[in-house]
Image (cartoon, rainbow, N blue to C red):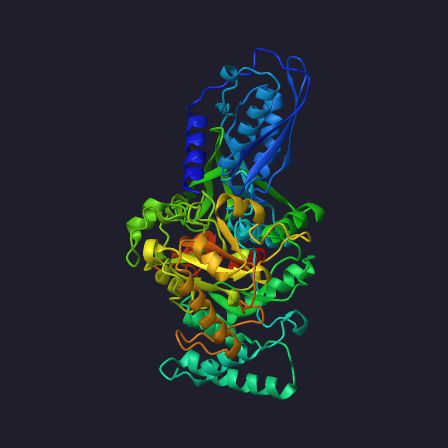
Length: 627
């Protein structure tokens, strides 16, 4: 595994250092195949050549991240044919996919008889256009969940929107996350069957002493009444309510208590808005890591958040909404008038073109800065060294966007608060949680083969627990029935990867017995077997005497093989601080007063996340159309 990663990194370094030219030696007529490693696995191309030119390049097999790699997969083959060269324009935010296509094409051309010395890979310099001056009614900065939602909602209200996205593709973190949307108080038909484990958690909440917190105490009283009515009704589906949502989010510290019920209602309204716009939420709700109550949904048949993003794109296109989207254009500063109100923004394109954009309102939907290691470490007060931590986020999530608002006088808070995701890929930082089907089905062990935490605790608690283990990693142990399959042939798991590829690369391990699995990952067989046996006992009784866990599901039992193990390492997921806004999402200045015409939503706000980014964006749109 280590050698493979070093090899990939060396290849990228070599590719970056090379110049470029097309083959001058001619080709042997025909179609040739080449393969190279991308971000998620092998990328295979077919290259058709005549005697003296490249006629066609087609990507025929790949499992790159939908919504992130799209631009590279479309543009790079076209550019190779257009330039007859492997020296092409960069595609912002899809570096590994871009080089995989170029390298695979190079391998195919070598088979076609090209000279190795003449097939050099590099990056050409784009020609900048003249400075452009643009006008729009509403300028949205950021093309993720909040930005797209805001653009659609605003445009549906009749206002013209220009949206800027610094990366080559829209979607932001929604397309590299699990794509889950919080749906509180969802219809019964979407909820899974109830279990004793769920009942035990409600009973724990009802038995807790919240007397010192007026919000929790009030919600607890209402929850008791709701739960009693639920029990009397004979309903066999999992119970849920807005109060249950509010208690869970408050205990995780994810926002002001006074806004929790509103947040729950906003989340529900957002899910219903997507249903009205064609979203297929037909699969049973489930829990996700750190948010284990089964109230999360995503578009049926999708692997990440691409379903919701595509739906927003289709809404713009099919409804003829007045929304213009510009990708690979980065906003660099806000334009203020003499009164300090925002009247537009300056931006620059990937080709160096400068833009001056005037607007009646500007929406900051730029996300957090989880990909900015230097800034994370600078602001960090609560975690160990973060200078080399990986991230689940896309590369464009850096602090410069936040700084743009701060330079305009915006007020911020809690910039040192982060959400660290416990189940990241140790090498890339990408999310590994979707390899298994449910949050309640997890068993964590450390490198000693010992369980060390309740696996259903909040994300930061889990991350801190894993960081304190040997080498700061843990193994997730599961069996075949717990894997989340994304295709009928059961060859790919929930993170979009082929199981066979992950086994071959050493990223996952498979064995028929627990003892055999322990040997493969370097653990003591007797210790791991004892850990699994003890854990199974807790699953059967819904009573964990070691760590107090009660949330288990029917598929939590590790009853029979084959068994699997994969390593996880905490990875930066969400920055929880951000810009302070009022009830209308108007950004406040350092004096606590609204900055004219400047709005913000999504992860750029305190406690922001993908889960509420959609609702933030929709609400901003409604507010802008009312003004």
